[in-house]
Length: 112
Image 1 (cartoon, rainbow, N blue to C red):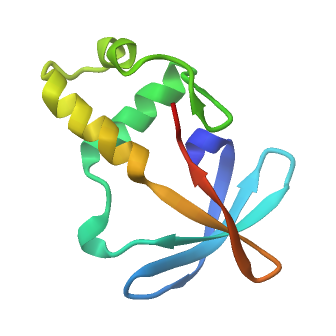
Image 2 (image 1 turned 120 degrees about the horizontal axis):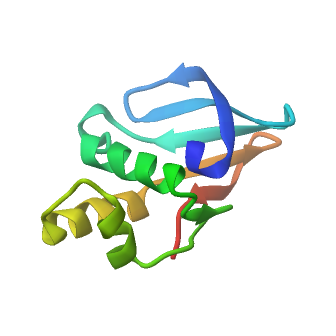
């Protein structure tokens, strides 16, 4: 969620396969969300490291990757491109539903 400018998260409900909460942005704007996630599907640590690299290098504009995967790889600490692509692909499948007026609407997701 930090890739999208979220400053703070407040979790409001956690079930066996969903996490509900509110995402707060710089200007105190907030967005309710629902992430369909179970403990066994939590992204690997390498995905979190990739997110950190993307943020530190300003490689995301709103929800779009601004560089090629190959260029991003060069900025990481990884040395195995095949493993990096598996991590990259995992990140690209993460999406979190936005909730507006009690209805699931759009998604938070990264695309290239």
